[in-house]
Length: 230
Image (cartoon, rainbow, N blue to C red; front, side, top):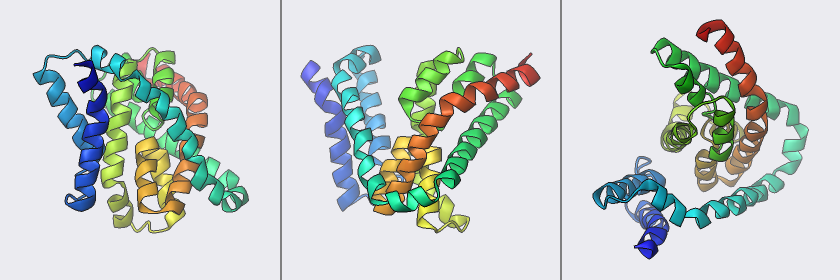
């Protein structure tokens, strides 16, 4: 059983990736989305606790570090352009973090969510490990924050580019910055698939968001807490 559980994730992902490449070319046929659906069904059907599945698959979490480091390759190739507009990219990323967090918290408040749920929604536009840490800092539910981040990332990977094109955003660096800021690692991976330059700028936004989120979100949450929640 342990062997099956440890090969299940890569088996599902690469199978759906192959199907997407050769047959299922629609953006809705995202390998991550389909893999999550299939694995969830298998865990429920087999009555397998998620904690057991997560423990067995711990080695894959170690590989995330290598995957993040690999993002430096397209980043390096566009380093000259990035150096020329560093402050613009910082401003774009900070705006993305602020807007996504404030909108999520305000919508949750208007729908009657409690303080803990609002705190869990605050770090929704950053990669999962940082979202978990920020959520814990705000006394949110870290597991819920992780799920929200994954859902946001998948939604952005599927619908991000079509929505950007719908609103007339066709500039490659702008598309990359938007995907990296709003959809973090999953959006960045999608950007790299589409265009290497887009992936480079998505990487910039991903890294900047990861740096800015722990600095900005606690302040914004505290202000909203003082104004609305107390």
